[in-house]
Structure formats: C-alpha cells, structure tokens
Image (cartoon, rainbow, N blue to C red; front, side, top):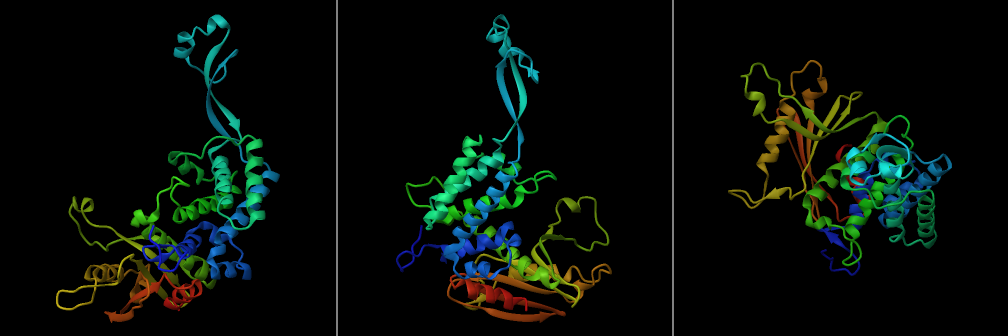
Length: 367
C-alpha cells in the first residue's frame, strides 16, 4: 500500500484512506437511513470516527434483533436417524447397512438461527472489534458476538455464493435490512486498512475497478441523501433508449446501449442534470496541444442529452444539462460550454481535501 510522505497517512491511488471511508459511508444504504443530526455531520467532518459510528449502529441493530428474536431460516442437513425425516438417502442407507441397525440416512431442512445472515453479522462484529480505538465500544462488539455464538450462531463467515442471498429481504425479515447494511459497511471499512500478516484481504489499490465503483456509488448516495428531501428525483444506473424510427431485424443485437451513471430530476423547476462519473484525469494530451478534454467522454454525454430530445413524455430532456465529474488530487478544473441548448460542465472534485470541502464541492456542482 502506498504511503503519503506524512507519517501515518495511508493513500490509495493518491486518495487518503479516511476519504475512502467517507465514500463508503455515502455509498452504503445505511447512510440513507441515518438521522441527519449534528452528530452525523460531525462524523462526516471527522472521517476517522466513521468506524465508531458504524460499530454503534451495528450494535444497536443487533441488540434490537436479539430482543425481538433473531431471524430464523431453513438449513439443509444430512443425518442418520431412527425415523424418516424429509427425503431418504437410499445410497448412503444401503452403503452403510443402516437398516440393520434400525437407522436410515435422511436429507431434510431444519429451522435454525444459524443462518448465513446471522453468521455474517457476527463476523462483522468480531471484525470491527479489532479496529476500534474506543475500548468500551470494542468490548460491546465482542460481547454481542459472543452472545450470538451462545445462541447457536456458529461457523465461518458465509461464502461469496451465500452472501448474495444475505442481501435479499422479504416481508418477514425487513427488520434485518439496516443491520445487514451496517455489517456490510463494517467489512468494507476493513478493506483499505489491511496490514500485512494480519488479515487475508485484498487491498483495493490492486483493484482499480473497486475504487471506480466506490466513487460512482458514493456520489450517487450523497446526492440521494442531499437532494431527495428537496424535491429531486435521483436515479442511479439509468438505461436510456435511442429514439428509433426504423430498424433492421439484427440491429438490436449489435446496437450499443446507453446507461447513465446518475440522473437528477427536479420537475418543480424543470431541471435535469445527467452526471457521468469518470475515475481518471479529466485532461489528457491532445494531438495538437498539451492538455485536452477526452473527446470520447464529450461525445458520450452529448449523445445522452441529444438522443432524448423531442419526447412528449419527457419534457425535462429538452434543456437537460450534463456533468462530467472526475476526481483529482490537488488540482481543480471547472469549465462549461453550451452546445445546442444543452449546458455541459467539466468539473473535478478533490478527494484529497477535507470532508467539508468535498461536501461543499458536490453541493456547489448542482446548485
């Protein structure tokens, strides 16, 4: 992991780890549920306290679930029984001559508290306990993890295949949603703080794709929380359609699709901002000049804006504006141009700055 010239400050792709934590908080569904209190804003200002905030929220959610009983689930089991339960495993029964001993091999489902979701939460508590600076809070995490083990939540952290089902909620387990969101954020916070020899985790500086997706989700989460109460509609990952008048049978298989990173709509004022987040330098060397905007990105945002004009069911598209938002470290670009009634802005946000500056910059870009 790269280190800043200042002792104790870890950098990943030039971004301080504490600001990656800030992006993780913005990207998490948990951020949308937080009470917008002065305490929450204070944590945004002091990003080193984000792990403590996550631990407090996770502990509260787990304590609440324990009081109301943990969610139970069905688990596949195989056992040799003296009576039939579920389905008989004839091969195992014959192979081990179980009938002669008055037994039969069965495969059945058992209702248990030892679900993948509960193991996931227990592991998150144990992971956080080793990373907190507050001894009382760390003790609280360990105590809750021990309580879960005594209740029967044992075994290892769920596999990647099992984790997909952990985040799917039904009508009867909706109360688990915020608890699982906090647990997931707890695991995410562990990624950029890995130290050799302590944890078998991959470092995100070896996977630039991870940081790109974090940046995209963090910007979307921030604007969702900031703008939704003000009457904006925030849509992330929106697919938009070409206005096709005629086509050949095979064009659908080869025609590129258009997917925007973020669309901000405010019908009351007739505003639409189409945001495309790009995790690279906003300027590059041009053919005839030292610095130039990336032409491919300009063509892309231009296509997003112009291709939606003329739709009777979407009046906001007529004068929509575009924003290409790049992260930078230590430099700033903010330029705009109006092309055929569409304002296109090319801007940067300095992810090496303080949290207050990052927040103010993101607010200013849509003001």
